[in-house]
Image (cartoon, rainbow, N blue to C red):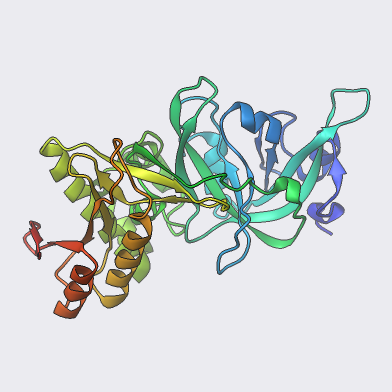
Length: 358
């Protein structure tokens, strides 16, 4: 019998009762336990509200099932993936640890001892382990938080009280351009490269820190030989997308353009969407892809049609211009598809220069 089998989803315990079973510290929200090979995550809705974030289940399942969002450590300022607690979540598989999630219930009557309900065992989502999200910290200043996407690996307790409240209205917030999870995976920090040695390397640490400071990571600085050993076809495409965005945004900023992104919330939904990038100077929304084949072009096409309905900036109430950014020129039929819906095309040539097809 494993220690975790001594408790079941839905059980309500104090930390004093949890620690002999799963380990971890008596304080803090992220508690690695080396001996028991666990990382215990405590979620407290009251504390979360004070620090400008919300943990809990997304009300919408995706094709792989339910997702529990858990905000990383750091009450003020940009959160960092190199911070020990966040790193413990990120590397839990490679460290042979299991994530256990608890949510605050209340207190034992007549005491200050908190009680916690056991939600179950989790693992970070392999395709999109986390998302960067802008919000206010404890100091009331805007910062980038790291929101981990956790998937249950067995039985779990799902209560309405632990579900994130849906957005009361649709909103589009212009935020600093932050590296996306796709870009981070591309920068050799995929599940295949979440190793101690890679996180200790200067270039990858720079990429991770850039993710939490609202900047594009220096993708070119990543250890290419390490990436090639770990890369699958999918991660190669993601890396190509990262390089494409990096090169084009650098070009725009060199021309004095203001570039950011939009954080979208849709009325009645709990999932937060994020655009690739937005050129505020030219009022243009971009969607990039790491391939120029039909599936990639259709993905860019559908996202641009979706996002441009909501994106507005600087008081303007008309739809932005939209551009598909690709690593090469697609087939004429695909160009015609984009043009028929007022979506422009910019592609990168073999010489690295960008051209506009129409």
